[in-house]
Image (cartoon, rainbow, N blue to C red):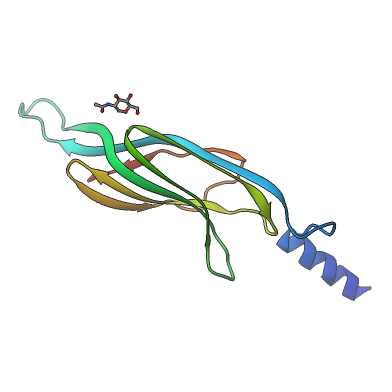
Length: 134
Ligand SMILES: *[C@@H]1O[C@H](CO)[C@@H](O)[C@H](O)[C@H]1NC(C)=O
């Protein structure tokens, strides 16, 4: 009896579908993609303002976080001269996807690497990527 409980616990924890290996999952991440920097105002009365422009080039990877193994890339996109992005992954995975983003962003004033935290997997995720010194 204890053996079966353990087996079901393992199946539950790893999200294994008994009918087949893995189950169909989809994750969509979208949001703003911007290069921002703090701009000091010339007047002493005004506060410094955030100035945002389009990214020059960006490479964005949708990653799957594994606790016990190497993380894997689910999807990758390259974009140019834009202020937003949209990434869709559809596929069969054994474990429930723990999505996060790895982005390389080129701005007019420099290049930046941004890695998000693991995002709450709600299928459709809004996540803004802001690169720069802010
Ligand atoms: C910024 O990106 C948007 C969306 O791709 C585009 O419509 C717009 O023309 C771009 N602006 C500049 C200044 O390149």
